[in-house]
View 1 (cartoon, helix red, strand yellow):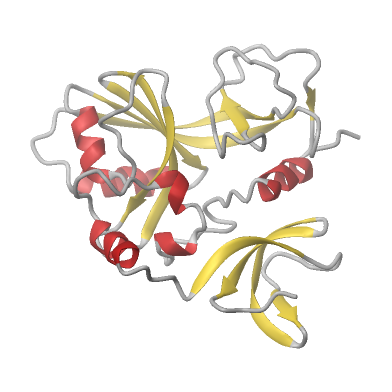
View 2 (view 1 turned 90 degrees about the horizontal axis):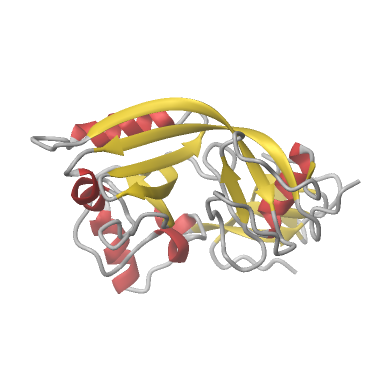
Length: 254
């Protein structure tokens, strides 16, 4: 058994991949995403959201700058089409082509400091990161194949929510718990920015927020989080005795 808390392992995953190419790709994505795309250099990777004008979430993306005129956006399988639809909605006289493919990738839990050529940074760069990259790249023999359960445990340990499991399209950014990782508050306007900026400037907190909590062994995703007889939220991902959960503001968890 591989210890997902201390050993590197890989699991196969399916990602929806949107490639944006053209002389206007950088400028266009900068105007549409929550992250600062303008300052990205080839090889840079940043997390970002794409939002509806109302501030609701369309998708959580990882944006990779492949070249000055080529960016790769990858997200959970099943959300790529909505990303393309949303980006095309405001694509007027823009020199940028969008190509959507579903690809089989590998996700690597690499907390041992091993360097993997060609890997793309993901999640937080604090020892809980996971690298996700093409299966065409060779892996060190020391990195064994793990299980989806181990991958979920690594994701919960990093407190990194994903679309579908933890983040839904009726949520706003302030509920995700990862605003500091995927939002720039110094860039220009983008669809949905007004709500994001308003809540930040007022110091407002969302009525609910995703967070990592301890849970009983019988907890399952979708069930209520109950503390001292009071329902305080809902489990979204459960991995052993740790979970990501959507918790009501002001809830007492002990």
